[in-house]
Amino acid sequence: MSFMKDKVVLITGGSSGIGKACAERFGREGGRICITGRNAENLKTAAKELTEKGVEVIFVQGDVANENDCVRMINETLNKYGRIDVLINNAGISMRAFFKTVDLSVIRQLMEVNFFGTVYCTKYALRQLLKYNGSVVGISSVAGYQGLPGRSGYSASKFAMEGFLGALRLENHNSGLHVMIVNPGYTESNIRKTALIANGSSQGESPRDEGKMMSSEEVANQIFNGVKNKKKRVVLTAQGKLSYYLSKLLPGLVDKMVIKAIEKEGDLPK
Image (cartoon, rainbow, N blue to C red; front, side, top):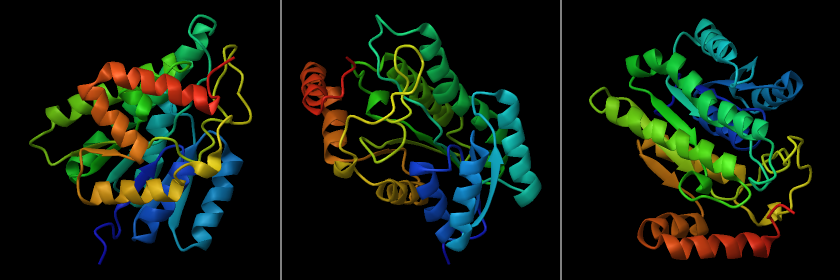
């Protein structure tokens, strides 16, 4: 019997990409799933597809940047399932703009969604997670340990998320709470298409070749195994692992590697 049997998993940003893939992966192992997101129609479609695959799932429309919405997400999950065992803080937005030209409202929005969204959901789920020796998962990024050009606000929000989760882990080191940070690297996802440019509008088409990236399903499988084995950090892709370890040993070299790689991909803001 899977260790997930009848456990409850709440996934923010669960209507597509990594979030939806996690819903399927954890649900396939017997978990009962709640997905959340801002677009009700997308959630409804995702929930229907997951149900057709045998996943027990509900959805709650809401914005993680809104504290009251986060309280409602938690409460509706509890009203349906009676407990929460795993919280996957996946909802996030990115940016493509140099700091010298970006509107500060973009930075604020990134912090509200990527950082405070994680803080709000974790705060209101924490009592349940502590009760059941559950897991808090934060989907970070290479940008969570390495500043990336054109993504000052994104890097700041992910650095902040990682600091918050690291402190949370230490505060609860004797409680049985599991805290895991995931650094996916480049993954097939809508996050680049919805990335905010300098004026706060969406980028549109991604400049990167999505076909060369790790699939959301591969990432979800790694996240599942990380929760199962109670890992503290999961760094994905060979490039991501290389940059993570080198950033600790040779930060200057990694800076040069990052600039070269992003220039080669044509992924710097114009």
